[in-house]
Amino acid sequence: MLTGRGAIVIVKWSELNENHQKLLIDMSQESTAQPVTVVIREKPTPPADYECCESACSPCVWDTYYEELNIWNAEQKALKEAVKMATETEQSE
Image 1: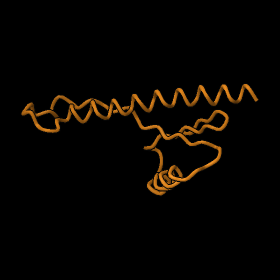
Image 2: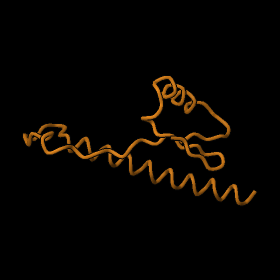
Image 3: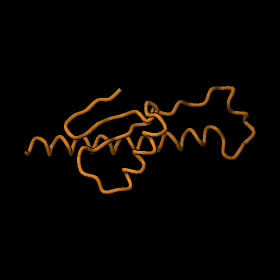
Image 4: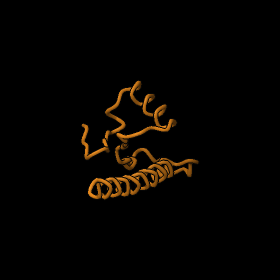
């Protein structure tokens, strides 16, 4: 699903095929002008009860989950800030 507001396009990473993912990675390493593409990962899901063996594995499935959740939360915060800045820029023009 694609949604857009002004120069921001929001795309779920899981909805892109491998070629599009590679293209976006390549584009992100270059200096690009608008439109800005924002790729959003789906929120991580906690491990099911049966996925943790409770043997103090390193890393535990819970360690991995919380690491991914922290990354996802940081991305969500950055996205909200980017949308806010883009909206303010559009309104000032």
